Length: 131
Image 1 (cartoon, helix red, strand yellow):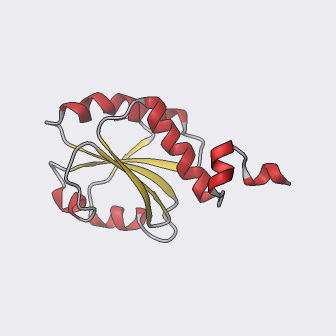
Image 2: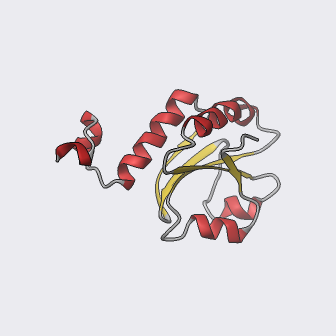
């Protein structure tokens, strides 16, 4: 696993991520027997490496080894990515994603975390650009 990807294996780690101070994250729910998960894994890790200096975490949860953690999110299909910020689920994507799609989700989560509105995100204007 890439050095910039966090592997969550306990309820305590998940609770910390989903706390009010947990920050921004993309959680990849996957399993070793899932072909699309295996295809998406290198893309997820590449984006995690690319965004290593950004205020977002890239997290993986193996649903085969830790089904109790995926049950909290009612995961029914793999792979599923869940985008969160400070304990709030912002969005989810079902199915394998390429690096470009994952990076776009990361940018979107970080813009939401900055408090940018829909129009700002649509036209690519950052809150600090308006000053």
